Amino acid sequence: MKENSISNDFLLEEKVNFFKQILNQIPDLIFQLTISPNDEFNFTYLNKNILSYFELNKFELKSNPIDVISNKVHPEDRDAFFKSLNYSKQNLEPWRCEFRIIAKSKKISWFKVDANVLLDKDLNTVFYSILTDITDIKEREIKVQESETRYQFALEASEKGIWDYNITTGNVFFSKESLDMLQLDEFDNINTNSKWDDRIHPNDLNDYLESIQSHKENKTPFFENTKRVLAKDGTYKWVLSRGKIIERDKNGDAVRIIGTHSDVSHNKQKENELLGNLDIIVEQNNRLLNFAHIVSHNLRSHTGNFKMLLNILDESNDKESKEECLSYLKTTSNALSETIDHLKELVDIHNTIIHKKEDLNLNVYLNQTLEVLSKEIKDNKVKIVNKIGEKDTIKFNPAYLESLFLNFTTNAIKYSHPERHPEISYSSSVEKGKLVLVIEDNGLGINLAKHGEKLFGMYKTFHKNENARGIGLFITKNQIESMGGSIEVESKVNVGTTFKINFNEEI
Image (cartoon, rainbow, N blue to C red):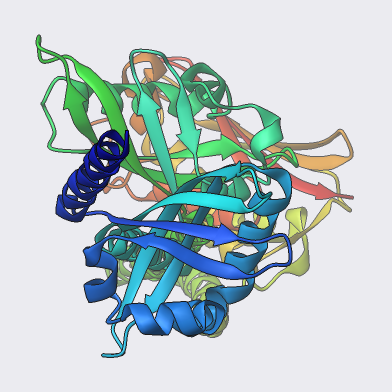
């Protein structure tokens, strides 16, 4: 009987030693912790890896296990460590905890404990525990977290948003930054491609879709598009989208695109301002060009009169003819002087980029023009019909109004019909509270179906005339429009032409 007992004890001891050997070969750290009802700690089993790993000996652990544990656990993790241990003890639930250990070498390592909890017959709480070194995993997690933090910071600093489009499902992920651009949040539910497309301005949608499709078909190395997108407040933001396909299926079809959003509304505003400034510069250049032509055209009219009158004066033999020519010369000289004054004013106007306006009587300026051209009118037997109201006055530039009457009158004479005497009619009326001037002639007329689009173009002529230079109508149109007015024309070949000038100013 005694021999059987000894034999059984021996076998049991052999089994225990066997399992200890097995446990010592396991790379994980295995221990058994027992806590008595009066909270006394005791490590009832430790595999050899624990002692070497933590640089401990059994005497330390047996003499003061609580202090040893406390000293080994990182100060920042101690509270959480013991709270989780006590919770498992009180509730007899598995103990799960991650914490840092400080070895004597000051090396810090991350560990995870997994333990089942039981009560033994003496009401001791027993933890059957495995410690796993998770340092590498934690370091990778920390690096990923740091990378994500840096990436998020970079996104916030660059004010870019992120989008991720699953083409197969049609779902789209928008980062907070993307949503913020449009004053949206996650509850606004724009998580599908179709809902995003609905927010794009109708005039920009086709270009946007074509840009994506072009990238899907490998026609472009990446996707890039700028369009207007509807914000929550009802306004449109200019958004620059950039993206690239990161996944294709076995057939080569695009499956997933990721990219960025940038609010470029400010840039678009600046771009529009620059374009506006460019328009101003172009307009100013046109004004300067217009001014040069005014000088040339207006002065040429007077010098032409001078030349003609001087030739007549030279050929005249009788006193009466000479006196008549001298009278015409005096009138032309006065008109030239007035023109030069007006042109001087125009120089000052263009230097300040301001169009000077004065209250001008239409009849006064028409009569001045007719007086300057009186010899030409007489020689060509021109019939003048003046139906302009005596008190009809407009706010206009003097040089421009002079040029207007000169151009239309000389053109009517220059392009008169060879089979009838020229007739020029001037009339005024009020339409919708604004003064309108109409000038009609019975000349050659213009084929508007053929020449209508280029009627007011620079250097455009429509009849064979040695004196035609094609700048008169161009000048006049620019002058009228620079004063805020507009011009219309009706014409029939071999019947005549009617010009209607709308001054567009309340009277």
